[in-house]
Image (cartoon, rainbow, N blue to C red; front, side, top):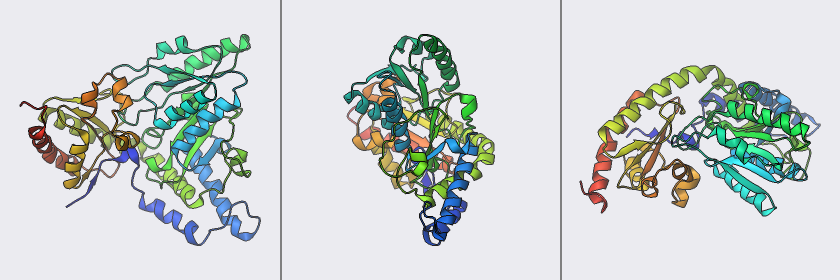
Length: 396
């Protein structure tokens, strides 16, 4: 049985060229990059090279790239780091209603320290309501965090437009001696999938992860624009310019750098291929299965994302039957799936709670083929039919 991996929102497979680049740093060049002896030289050079490769992917200055262990750490470093660094100026943050849990729970921690949080609403397509932003801003607002694209429903957010609103507000706030609003965006789902340029977007901080563009787990990054103060969350040494203490994971960082270098010229071609397969899969499922609905905007969505709700059955059951056919998918965010809770993303866009539990996410990668999509379309309607016959909610 051929195995088909369509759970790429949780992490992509490692490119073989990335693996080959990493291997020497697991065994041969194992030294600490801060060491002044010869064993630290190669790791130090590799760290500098990777920083340049990763910066080039998002058109950033290498000195503005800070490596972390994963995207959740980068998001925590951004949200808590900015909040704590600016708490003397203000204790109010704004995030969208559909952020990843690493942002949602980070602001909950800030709330325990006296911060207040406001939520920027989204429409039924999962796109933030830009016009609502100004009404949420207070004199004490110090941070806005809105993801570039959603990890569940795939909607691409108007980050550039939001940045324009923030620039306008900051100009007014400067004249009133109010704190400047720092803008962070979680771009884990877009970097390596879509062209991302931090200068064009106008953000102050940007989170991204190598595991989303065919690099290894264990290496992610946070772009921090020069002049933005971030309180370090890990106390220790002077690594990452003192912003993130601890010995860097050189093999994983080398892998992220190589993955960034490889993916940049591939983005356009990969996107066109995956978008065609995405649309074929969406059309096939919606036409073959009654009482199914696409979640998220039909056009302003990631080329890899197919999130569909199937009424009268549960997502976990669909996943188990698909796994039996060699097909890996998910029922939304990996963080939500294990908790067996209704997705806060789907609830925010108005999906009824009972239908939320019947949602499934197929997320593609550059290795996905037309045959893979045809396999899903050949078995998935039958799985749904079988499960509906067992469901007490289904009356035909």
